[in-house]
Amino acid sequence: MKNEVLFEILGAAVLLAGLAVFGFWLARTHLAVNSLKYAPIRRNDMPLHLPFMFMFCWLFFSALTSKIAQKFFDQAESLGIYSIRLAVSTTLIIAGLILAHYYFVRGIKGFGIRFRTLPEDLYYAFLNLLCAWPFIVIGLVVVEFAGKMIVGPDFQLEKHQSLETIIGSHSLVLKIVMVVLITIITPIFEEILFRGLIQSMIRSAIGGPWISIFITSAIFTILHQPQHWMALFAIAVCLGYSYEKSGSLIRPIFIHAIFNTINTITALYVSLNAG
Image 1 (cartoon, rainbow, N blue to C red):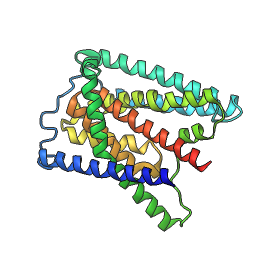
Image 2 (cartoon, rainbow, N blue to C red):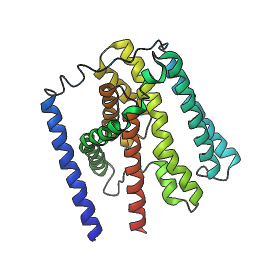
Image 3 (cartoon, one colour):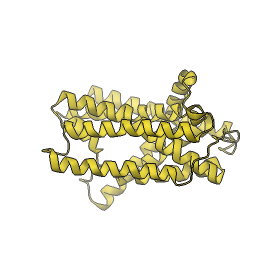
Image 4 (cartoon, rainbow, N blue to C red):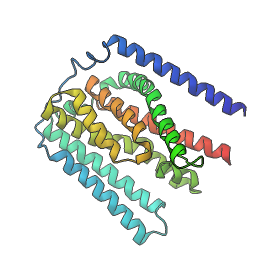
């Protein structure tokens, strides 16, 4: 009981801090009007279809691994299938960086992979995520409230399939593979795909940073679980903004990794206490 009270107090403190920082950002940027006024443009000569072909490859291999799981493994949530997904995602990361090297001016540096800004990116990653956190929580609360009103009091938000695997598995090796996949590999790959390739292409085609952020965030959101759409759209806008503001792809990767790590730790904490 004491731990639950402390957890709730900590959660409330984070929400209030996030709202305070967001309010300061609004005041400083004249209600966001000047927030991306000097956002750097990532010059590239990518064909318009290239990022979407890359996304199609990702979706194809994701579907293929599911078919492989059904045919060759005893269960979908097995070490074998997630090892394959880990290998596929790592390969796609390398492929994305190769595309960036060839199509972006200054290669992967122009793409936003600049390690000299790591300390600054890590600091602003926490700050940006703190600003977005209240809206992520609001999105989850709204969906849960609507679900209880429509479905009934037994309605519960779906947990991410990967988090369910970590919680339910008795294999330490599988847990380690899943943690690496969720907290490291997935953030890197999805930021290369959505922010790096798709958002950069839309920004080049349309010109406005906010339009490219919202379109990319919508694409990112609809490819995830519907119950989480409101919360995911909030975090996606945060990721897109951090990329446009800094020109560094490392910053949204950090935000994504921290967000996934928090979700993983929270899920494990809740499951341990429930058990």
